[in-house]
Image (cartoon, rainbow, N blue to C red; front, top):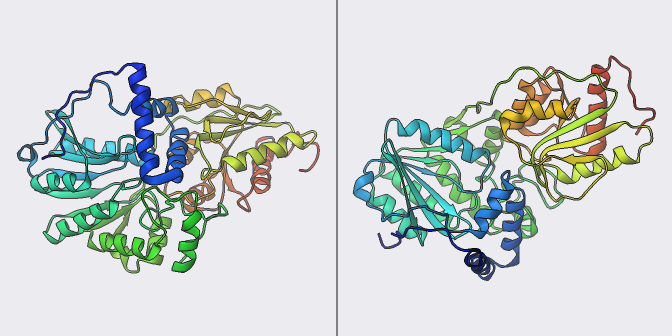
Length: 438
């Protein structure tokens, strides 16, 4: 396969890494312009592993990683999995999926590396792992054709260059009687924005007016890279994939309802399978008079970072309001605020200790877009922490049914604070330390 590289990467010197990073950045800007460059910077800054993601950005060739020539005869009958390389819950799900499959068969995981603009194929078997890279999507798909896959799994094609080519290939292979199973973790098949937020940073409800969608997409900050503002073409391509699939698995019923709005009849292939979240012993609430609001995770714009600052401003300006915010994770864009403490990235297992260390009394899940599933919400609910969320998507459903949870009346900071106050009154037996209304 002509695109496979048979080189062994070694650790480059600092000047070489800087030069490589600048060259890669130049390729991005030359090919896709300012908008893609800004998107790339934003995804790096909002990545849960901020330090690691920045390091990988300036070190496109991972140290001591062998990229071997792809030999399709070694991978005959493998299960092919398509995934993105951006990080987050979808990658976590894919890792667990592949780990289970490898016990029974060989697996080829195909991704697109946004730092190098190359396609990566990782072979997984009980004998070990091998890595292969290709310069074009045509070379990647040709290699996969030669491996004669026994099954195709879509985990995510978000941020893939030439994702339409992969979509057409999957439909073709299904016509050749190769089973195709779709796992969906976001709204990529509905809209290139993925998070379904319009230009006003509001959930659009899944618009069916194509002209309105195209106007929104033209200037929408959240539109994924390598995508155009043509919603009719977009939904035509992904509709063919969905209707070709043997099965479509989503983590929450609300996602299936939105898919049905654009792709009628899709529920016949759809099944709801919630993700599994870690369980833990209940967190003991402190009996302090101070309200400490925990916001957990990697909080970017679609996760409500601007709303967090608005909430902090209200707390800061209201006299007699004894309350503060601790972000256990990251907050982007970041600016210092007297009522906000940002702890930085954390390990999931450390969450109970971090809540106790900061004397947290209530949690807020500030995401302003509908989630398909929220590991954070389920982790906090497992700890029995009182929790507030907005009436959107999977988070609204699970927190709304949670014995120690409540939903804000609207998607705004003051509604969130009203809901927080209700939970704090419950904790303190009706007595509130807040001396005046906000």
